[in-house]
Image 1 (cartoon, helix red, strand yellow):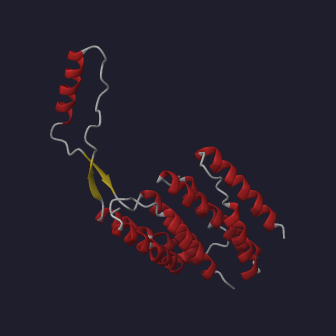
Image 2 (cartoon, helix red, strand yellow):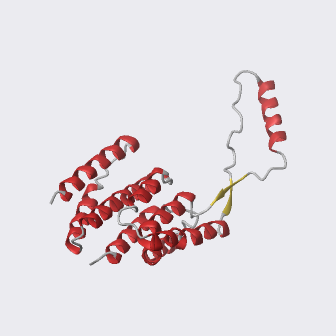
Image 3 (cartoon, helix red, strand yellow):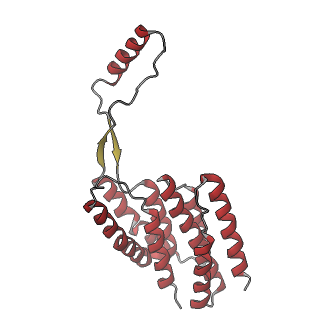
Length: 227
């Protein structure tokens, strides 16, 4: 019974931190997801340490999905925290291969499907000096010479380094089979969303992938460790 109030307290703390850092219009309320997960874990397993491991796993996955949706980035502290969480009841025969089961294909996928996106025209390269036309002209000329011959593009990809680190950490906890199941469920939701955006003409919209990975891996955890 002590686990439930502890999870509720950590959920509130997590919500408070997210609210202070990102100032969203709506309060994060991640505790509303973590607490039901805690109840489910306590119902499907009698192992207290496994339930603790799952609750910590859920809390950081929810935080990763929320932050990625807001900023398109995943802080390195979250995969690191998940690696530490994975030390609870660890089985190295499952954890070590799980690190690379999904993260390595994602890395190769990111290299393969990285795209070049041109910078928006009219973006000022150097600040103008008010009241000095000659300085303005000199600044533009020197900037043109400086960027002459360069490929003025930005490299983008749907799979970022944060996503790869997150799935590596999830594989450390779930093992190779568990993380593969989590990735399957993640893409099972992500692909229809992407296709819907494609039909609406939003072909170049970059989706935050952590919310989908978080949901898929959390579901995989509940399936993998149901006893």
